[in-house]
Length: 260
Image 1 (tube, rainbow, N blue to C red):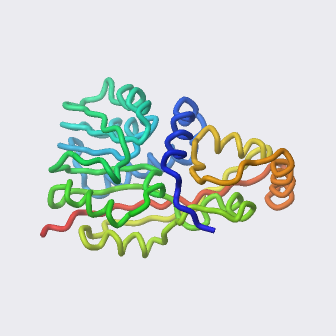
Image 2 (image 1 turned 120 degrees about the vertical axis):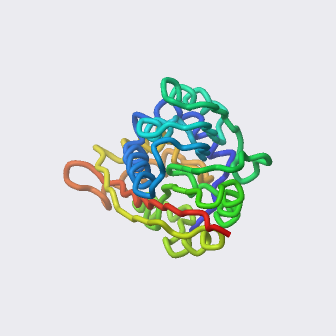
Image 3 (image 1 turned 180 degrees about the vertical axis):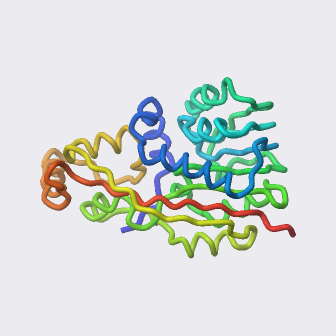
């Protein structure tokens, strides 16, 4: 069953994981690095005039982007107010003119900065309820020729959890993403990949999920019996002999605003 995320639950879980996210979000760190490389291949210059980062979180992408680029103005958004401290730490020491933190849900924040040269987002847009409307808003905020670059996850992401619990986010296909972006943007590039992590035990998988805050789906509370059944089923289905697997399906997208 595909469920839309509970935004309040997402906010609480990511808020609790801010201090552990950088340590535990191995895949998301790799995704941030790949996204920065994709931005470079798209022809974004070393100095970017105006940047908006959506879902800045612990500042992982902020650090990666500013290690290779400077910015005249950097606007960082996140659903979690506590993200501001992490983002400002990530920006500190880099060549950035104006910097401002925009707290709130990117789908409902009323006043967004305009005339942007770049909008970036790492491992965030899968939490949105209306990706098409998001593309419309970002298209309106970007100048003609501006770039929207983001990473997300595709179908089959965390498939072990999805199969055992019969619940998942409504991940979109690449074709669906491209179709939604098509009104405002032309495709520069899309990359899909699979990355499989190995953990010592199912308990380690659940700790990883808790420390990265990546479960924003509401469900029935787990009893001790249900928890122990989950551990047994996970070991039986996804054992490698030395541990168990957890599969990620990153998707990287780069679009350029059409010159209308």
